[in-house]
Image (cartoon, rainbow, N blue to C red; front, side, top):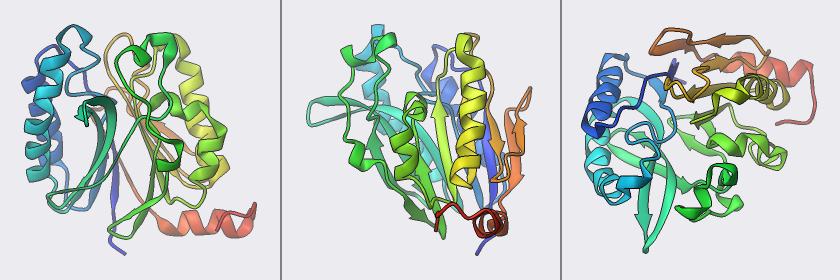
Length: 241
């Protein structure tokens, strides 16, 4: 097993898509090999509904650029993409120049009107995927609120959460991400936007519940320790394999 470094990213999404992409690529390039990096939800474009066609056109270009930066690294983020004439908020995992996993957001935030722009994907696609020996699960922002999805990811070593979470519900984000790590006895890497409308509470929580937030750091790093996952599941046995 490689010694992976978990990295929670926190940066502001501007109206300039290219500038946002370059910010992400810089953080990727500065990270050491064997880093697992999680960026905020739709961090390259934001929910720029007024320019939705441009948002969708930008996606293939961004995918190619991130593929090139993903050698010896795992990169997780969401992007707005079209599939068979349907638009999804798509979670993507990049590794060694490839997209190794993707799915659309399955629980849209209707309070924010997301259902007017996106199609929902199936809950069945919320699953554990193994990447370079790591058992990963992905929850996209609002999906964090659904306990059934937590159960679907029982057994994951690491659950990553790209988010664009409203500042008025900051405590919800902090409590839910920490609770998920404790309940599923795994690492949680949560990345929320640094925009003023969001919580700015990116962070990493250990299986024991130790909670560290980025504060003013664009990249918070914590060394992944598989033994901590195994120890929690052995001594506080709640039936998670």
